Image (cartoon, rainbow, N blue to C red):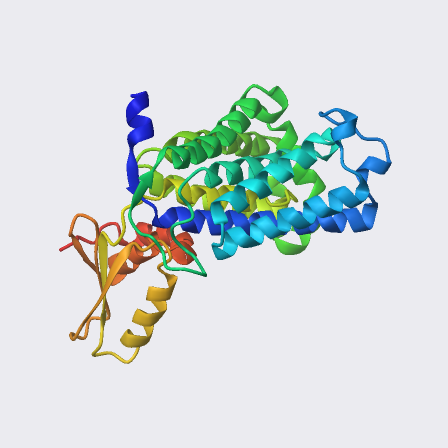
Length: 350
């Protein structure tokens, strides 16, 4: 089992996209740390709690240089120049800075840096290169599995922590948050709805649903039958977090980490647009650009029917069902997949 884990090889195309995504997140994180240095000063000049010996904590100028090198590593990872080593160096630099002062530690920051480090252990330097031709083929899959495991571990730890916390499980935490945000919701929702969601039993039900959702995400992402539903739930879950709370780059870290669960094999589906319609050729070009995951073979047909999609099994889908399958495999349109699945589930494929 262990030998098979390390020997498994899959297509490396998506690993390059994973590298670019975390390069962007690391660059944003580094720029935020630099802004903190400007606005609040250097943490080493005031009270701090290093995890390392004090002599290993850099000076203010040394920390500034470290941030510059970290930003450079993230930028090189994005453009694909020395990308694997650059991403690794940027992630390690960020972790080193946290070890210099435990007061700078936040779970979301640690998660970003840790997942970026794991991404750097994959052969992520072979695709999505701004300079130089891509090197398609297969590569070791074990590090990508570790990325997925780390994403699941976060959901599992969060859900179990809430489950064993009587205040969370009983709804007291969410009821307090609903009460604190009532002055905002009163301006956005009818009074009857505000009163409904302010009741203690509603907070208890919402708490149990939140715990169940995170448990489902921790496990459902690993199984082919439940993965689409888990991914959609995760997207909605993190959109809700972004709207209701300030968690820095946490939601973006988790959403980008979902790329580790995408099936690595490419072009296993087919999408065909009609050249007999006015919109067909333009939509065909647009969706070729949106197909970042390389899910589809892109074709055209001369019949009036605008869109046809064949799934992995070769089953043809038309109309709303075709649009549903297209949204399922296109990241930008993925939030539309579940509503379309609900309205088109009775349509028989051909």
